Each structure stands twice: as C-alpha cells, then as structure tokens.
Length: 454
Ligand code: NAI
Image (tube, rainbow, N blue to C red):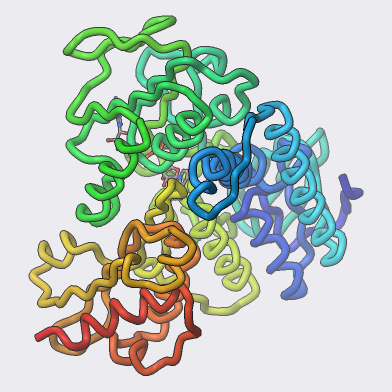
C-alpha cells in the first residue's frame, strides 16, 4: 500500500479491477492526482484473481492436455503415459495471477497512483467536497469513480458455499477432480467451466432454462457450439428448470441428477454497498448519464456496477473514458463494436449485430462465409472445425456483424472489430492483402464471399 496523501486528490477510484485500474492509470497519465482502493491485496479485480485470467489459464492447460492425449498421433507424435497433476496446474495459474498483479503495482508506481488496500466507502457526497473513508482515513477528493464490479448471482434460497455448491470462483479452485458436476446456466461461465472439468475427466451435465446455449451469440453459432460440445461428451438439458438443489443432486422436472459438485452460473449481480444516496435502477445497477456521472455531481460509476455487457474490456473502455471526462475531454465508447468471446474449444466470438438482430430490425443484409476447412493454415494445423460468418449491409456493403466459431475465433475477432471501428465495407477487407497461409485469410474470404453475393 502506498502512503496516503492528506491533501486533496483529483480522483479516488473505488475498485481496482480492469475498469478501476485502467481509469486510475489513465487519469494519472493525464496529470491528475489519483488514489485507487481495493479490498483485495492483489489488484486486478475478479478478472485477474478469480475470473478471466485463471479461467483462461486452466482452459489453455486442459486443452493442451487433451491435445497431447488425443490429437498428436496423427502428426506422427507418439506420447505414452500422459497424465496430469491438478495441483501443479493450479500452482502455474496462481503464479501467473501474482505476476500480472505485480504488473499493475508496477504501473501504479510508475504513474504515481496511490494504491490503498482496504474497503472504501463514500463518506461525504457534498459536491465539491467529496470524501472517501478507507481504513479510518478520510480522503478528500474532487471526483470519485465507483468501479466495484459484480459477484455471482445465487439462486433464491440456495447458499453458494464454494464446497459443494460453487460459483465460478469455487469452480476455479477445486483441488480434486469431481466425478459428476451439474452446471446451472449455459452462458459463458457455464460453458467454459463445463469444458474445463469435462476435459479433466468430470461427467458434466449442463441445465439451461432457455432453448439454446450461449443465448447472446448468433443462433447459427450457438447451434454449432452445442453440437461440438456434445461430441466432446458434455450433456445438455435445455428448456429445463432447476427445481431444487440438494447436497448431492439437482432436481429438475424429469427427476434427480446426481452431482458431487454443482456450479451456479446464472449471471452476475452488481456490488455497490458503498453509499445508499447513489440512485440505482430497478435491476440494481447504478444509474449514470452519458458521461458516467451518477445522480451526485463528481461521483461517477463504470463497469459491471452500471450494467450493460458485463465484460472486463467493456469496463476498461469506460474506465479510460471516465478518466478523460474528468480531465475535460469528450470521449466516446462505441458499444456497437465491443467484441465478445467464449473460450471453449472451438471458441466462439462476435462483434456487431447478429443475424436475428438484423432480421428484427428489418435490415437488408447479405451473409458471407468461410469454412475453416477451406483455410490452408487451419487445415495443416488440424484446427479446421468452424467458420467465419460476416453480415454486411446489402445497400452499402458495410460490415454490420462478424461471428466466428473456431480455434482462433478469440484473436481473429479483433481484426473484425478494427474493421468495423473504421466503418469498413466487405470490399475494403477484400482489397487488403493478408499474409498466407494464415487464419485471418478466413475473415477476408468471408468478406469476399459477402461482396460477390447478389
Ligand atoms: P450469463 O448471463 O451469460 O448466462 C446465464 C445463463 O443461465 C443464461 O443462459 C440463462 O438462461 C441461464 N439461467 C438463468 N437462470 C437459470 C436457472 N434457474 N436454471 C437454468 N438456467 C438458468 O451468465 P454467466 O455465464 O454466469 O456469466 C456472467 C457474466 O460474466 C456474463 O455477463 C458473461 O458475459 C461474463 N463472462 C464472460 C466471459 C467471457 O467473455 N469469456 C467469461 C465469464 C463470464
């Protein structure tokens, strides 16, 4: 913890997750005097400690394991006696989390952000005379940014004890492989955790309320992902409501499903217990105006706590934007082009409109596609499952949405996001030379397909 300055801060940021720490560093770069408070000693928030980073590390490791076990013989690589050490997997992951946490400390030191480990509460809401209480100290500040994130939603009457009934936090720290796991909810968390534990030998059943998995993605990709995950051995019960959760089972209308671990992954709820004068909407999210300012002048809120897409990189964008607002600039976050990724295998990624959204809006559009089976790099590296789907305006040829399912969907989507940010037409991508043989050619080929469609 850095020493607290008794003089007035320009900004006190409550919450050191991706939104909060990016906001702090940006504000400091812009010449403001900044303190950032977090109740955890490792800054980086849910994303770094118990979310994006450990989950993607363990997904990567478990994928490497299944690849070594099942997929190398065809390349002429014969490895026998493959097994794994779960504790070492967790040790590896924890070490990377610690290193990345140290990276945030390094940046705070570099840009002279005061790092405070403690629980921050808003002590005075008087505009022009704001105060934050932390560890019995009062910090005087011109502006406050609330970036306190979210926590896993619980089912009514169900206690998430992180022993038998888990949130994603518990599911990322199991020290024994469960025999049977029931996952409630087929959103990003449910699907990623199902993939992780199923790869390591757990018998996983996913119970999902709606008639499809990954409800927010284009339905063609959601269907393709369902088929692929079923082939990998994960069982899905769609249109299914959980009626009760027992110690070793989950009750649904068709009967009981046995489980030694039950993961509840039904969404996330905002964390905001820092002041009751801040107005929230009827879903519990803090209300802000277009400049992220709450009902109290000088108090801003960003990230999961204000709702919208609950993604780390959306919070980061808002963190940067609010730092710019406070320093007198007029930033703009384009919510239409925030990419999203589900890190299963194959991964699924999207940016922009889905086909359903374009139909609902009566937009005239063309669909361009490229199967990875037609892509040289995908073929030679044996990752040819999946496709790129590009949706373009029939009138202007502008790219309206890009949806990818495939091994490299996660990184590939960012080329699409850049293209859309510059208002690219399918023809623009057609006219840009792409290196060969590379995965990104599949995006270009999907654009070429769309461009030549009548
Ligand atoms: P989610 O909102 O994405 O999905 C929850 C799913 O649970 C929905 O499909 C819903 O229909 C289902 N559900 C709700 N109540 C249910 C019930 N009683 N019985 C059965 N099914 C039920 O929530 P999730 O997966 O927990 O993720 C939380 C947030 O974190 C999301 O905003 C997600 O985007 C974000 N996240 C993103 C990741 C990524 O980008 N890779 C990874 C992890 C989380």
